[in-house]
Amino acid sequence: MNSFKVSRRDMLLGTGASLASLAVSGNAQSPAPAAERDPIPVAPTADQIRRMEWWHAAKFGMFIHFGLYSQYGRHEWAMETQAIPITEYIPLARQFNPKPGFARAWAKLAKAAGMKYMVMTTKHHEGFCNFDTRLTDYCATKQGPKRDLVREYVDAARAEGLHVGFYYSLMDWHHPDGARCATDEEARKRFVEYTHGLIRELLTNYGKIDILWYDVSSPLDAKGWESERMNKMVFELQPDIIVNNRNKLQGDFSTPEQKIVAETNGRAWESCMTLNDSWGFQRADDNWKTSKTVIRNLITCVRDGGNYLLNVGPRGDGSIPEESVRVLTEVGHWMDANGDSIYKSDLCQPRRANYASFTRTGNTLYMHVHFWPGEDVAISGLMAKVKSAHLLKNKQQVKFSQDPYRVHITGLPAQAPDSPITTIVLECDSEPKQDTNFVRNNKPRAGV
Image (tube, rainbow, N blue to C red; front, side, top):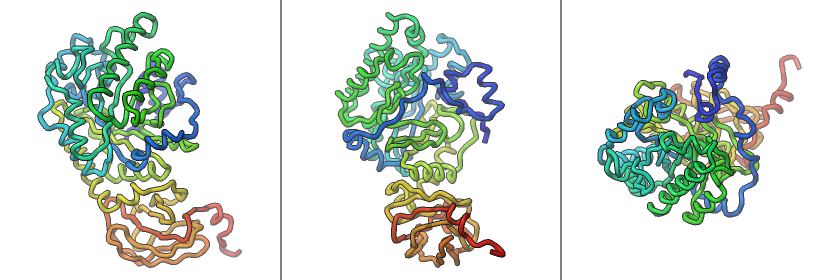
């Protein structure tokens, strides 16, 4: 996989020189300037715990980037990175016309993949609104679709029993005050009222909404956006909603992008990632993650108490690329048999293995073997006593032995019993903890 990936933040902050340095270093996640960093996290409040209970149980969600850029087919940042003039870009709004039932296909795929919630772009940086609004004609009901695409999405998600999330980009490349607001106070006031007004419509016209997912606060800070007033309005309209941290307030959860970084102090977090290297549809991007990679990422997130929001980029007609469908279908088949090891997971301390990763529920440790070594596997430094072991796929008991340094599971089939990852269930007499330093310091060596 190409390691040179540029996040939304990098695109906003990067000059030619900084992008060149990223290309040389292969690291597109360089530290942001102090003014761009998130506030120091604090422990969740009782109200946050109440509102986020379903979200913590959900673990896995579908992100959908869909807009005029989907019609263009060259990534959601094309308007900016290719410096496309407004007059050339606007005609896409008249061409954009998703086929009937597109959202139902999204929701059915999300459910089949084991996802429990969806987050759709209601307005991306290009400024086009996928919903019905009285505040601009640059919207789905007054352009090519002649219908409310957000309404169709909401109805489809609810029909499949999925929680509903709205993505909303604060940045706007279309609105005349979108850039001017940084230096013109009257423009700022107009644009902030426009922004608050669109958010008010979204949270008023579609019933109960579960997530508001802000994105890209540039060019203003929290004071400029009047984010305190913004969030106050949001919670007055939707008392049970959860919001992220990208309007420059702390919000309810953090949003590491294209990387998995666990929060501390009980702070909720969600890693958002693409299935290939693009958020919006990019017809030439064939760098797809495998189902094994997706599942390993999901395991890593839930092991450390986080959620995994995995993106699809539909074409302009609303169809999801076939490779995305194939990968998510494979993930769903695995989740059908292994879902309990994900949905019911607690924070899991064991993590050291060169061919496996781990999740935990109470005293039960799930060993997810992603590189099947053959007839035996082992875990080093498990401090709890194992009472029994079995394969999760077929409930077959497996033989094991345990000494102070390892649990050794033997008599396994030469070929992996499950695909793309086989899960072995270890029932322990206490919460499973791993201490590989104990092994390193105490295991007998030759001649000692």
